[in-house]
Structure formats: structure tokens, C-alpha cells
Length: 278
Image (cartoon, rainbow, N blue to C red):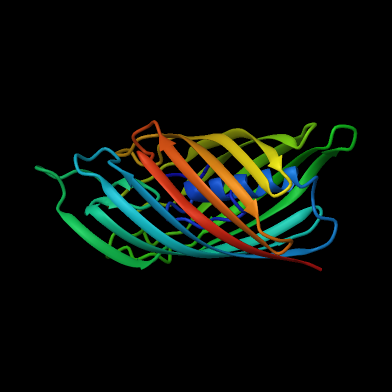
């Protein structure tokens, strides 16, 4: 459950693990953008709705299942973009597992099994191009993100505190509809006396390939250090397939396999996106 995966799918998060999922959202968006032949010259407004389902133990004996429908918005210009996400969370599992952060300590015999539901942490982000190399098409962006503590701390859906991150993201178009992308950054979570958190590095690397005029595939790896002393680090791969229904509509389907204690064992979801170019 981290930051590096929630920004890549669409350039904004639409999943329950607000930071990890958001990086996947951004990766999907970046993959589709590069496969389409570059960045938008005019303004593009995107609205999306998605459903993400994940299951993982996060250091506990019993797995936690998270189901999250989300709404997202993004406005993209040639050199900058802004966006936000509103997730809803439904969780079933040990009561000490906090979505996006992992287990908050441990109890003798294990934490009780509980079901919780409510609004998640609202995420707002902005990015700005800081370097371009016209000869190769290389683009490097600086991105800032705030996850507001809107999820209920009483229910264990969040900490009630804001969370911040800053990152650099690079993308390099290649020949024949292929592209490479990578990013790294620093997350600045704010904990509580009962759930102390610390800063962590995160990063991702991957690529995309345009399979046909309407189809694009993406594959990438996300990693992040642990933010909680009682939690583990994250490492997971995402495979995404995008189908462009029309100029205005597209559908993303993705699957995730985790390889570390802080990642879900498996996750997957669907995203429906509407876009309008001004």
C-alpha cells in the first residue's frame, strides 16, 4: 500500500490504496499518452470512474480485502496538469490494518476481524514540465501531491492527518508506438501518537506499447520503503491494457502482483475515462 503505484493509470488516482494506486493510475495515463504520440498541445479535461479490488496480508495472519470505487478529474496542458481523486473504501480484515499504510501495531492473538466502509482520503496533485529534449522527445516533470486526511480515523480507514509527496517523472517515446517511463520521489506522511510514520523513498519504472490503433499495453514495477515501523516495504508489478472506444472514451483493465509485505498479494480493476479536448 504506497505512493509509487496511485498516479500513473490516468495521471490521477482512482483506487483504495491512495498512494500506490495513484502511481499506477499515472502510469496508465502516461503509457496511453506516449502511445498516442506525445503530450497535448491544447487543454484536455478528463473525468474517470474506477473500481479497484485488492487482497493482502500486510504482515498479519488474516488477509485484508479492499474494494474501492472512485471518481477522478484531471486537466492537462502541454507543460502542466492538475487533478484530484475521491475514493470510497470498503475493507474486510484485521482491524489494525489502515488502507494505504499497513498494520498499526499488533495485538496478542491477532487483531479482531472487522468490516469498515466510508470516504477515503481525498487526493489533489499538480505537475509541471521542468525539462524537455526535443531531439529525442524526453520529458521530465516535477510532481507534488497532497492526500488530505478525510478518511475516518475512528474507523481505521486513515490517520486523519494529511500526507505529502514530491517526485520527478520522466518519459521517453521510442519507435513503433513504444515508450519508457520512470520516476522517483519522497513521501512525507504525518502519523499520530498511536501510529507513528516516517518519510520514505519510492520509485517506478516501466514501458508501454501500442498494440493496434485502439489497443495499448503497459507493464511497470513500483517500489517504496516502509512508512510505518510496524509495516513492510512495497514491491509490485502492474500489467495494464487500454482500449480506446472513441476519441472521447477509453477503458482500462489492469492486474497487480505484489512481492513484498507492504503490497497486496493480488489486485485488479477497471477504469472508464471520458476526455474532452478544448
